[in-house]
Amino acid sequence: MSTHQQQCETAIVAGAWDILFAESMAWSRNPDGAKDPRPLFAHNVVYLVQGRFADAWKTHALCLEAEQDIAVVGEWVNDLLGRHMECGYVHLIKGLFLAQSGQSEQSLRPYAEAAKLLPDSVYPHYFQAQIHERAGHLEMAIKEYREAVRLAPDFYPHYFQAQIHERAGHLEMAIKEYREAVRLAPDFSPARMNLGVAYQDQGRLEMAIKEYREVVKLTPNDSAAHSNLGCALAEQGKMEPAVQSYKTALKLNPQDAEVHFALGGLYETRGRLDLAQKSYQDALKANPDFGAAHSALGWLALGKHADIFSRALKCNEEDPRAYHGIAEIYAIRGKRQSAMENYTKAMKYYRDPEKQNQIMNQLFQEGQVGD
Image: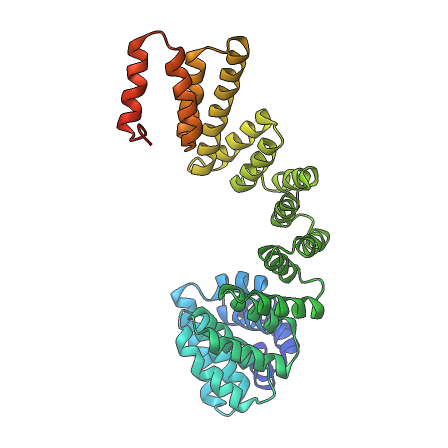
């Protein structure tokens, strides 16, 4: 056993995470640890207890994806547990190993044992809550998160509780927990973003916009923050600022079909049909299967035809083909009354009996005659 391995094991037993990280880093840099997944698993553990989930995920890919690596780490953890059965931190390590190697349900037992042996530690409750949440046991998850908050008023348990409440449709409870997470960690942008979404779902647009603006300050290169801000501004009727936010989002992520589509909708509302058409086409370039963009382009085409027919009627108020075309557009849009009014005028001005009969037959087949 190398000195670094011994030092890592001593740090685990003591729950000395800073020492564990330093020693595992030294172990992984040594020739005997360069290809060993165990020091990387030790990094992973430290990242998890520190709440550095992005770093933990990256390290997980290096030590707990290959079956051979899982076997090596598992043997080490089991050996360590065999020598330290009364150490709560080793049970915690066992739970983390099981949870990350595809054995989530089995991790609950060592977590529960760690909670008994470490009655003042937040970690067993925190990680149990995550397992319960993934399994859909939301009441149990909230119970464990609350216990974690009681032991250590950290922002993460509030954040995760809020997500559970939000999924369950309990927006007021979600907002309460998100606000507490933001209070404890004002720079934690995911909590602010989710708080903004919850406010927006309630129609509290000013509050939502305030949170989205804070997220933009914290993470100016986050396209989702700009697009969410644009959406809330649009709902508030502030079209020009909304357009600018959507444009910024698209500079950061040009392949976001939904943002292209939303921008097209704003342009269409403002009567900028040329720009709307381009935005809808850009949405389809980003995602050719975006059905809503296809529909929007179809409606734009119909709208252009309607303008042409209207111009024709200004030139000739008795143009039957113009009335007929407008009637077809209204029929497609489901506006039956307006369609019938224009069909009637078309039949009135058509001189050709065949054209009149064509309209009558069409209305009869569609069940609109005698309505």
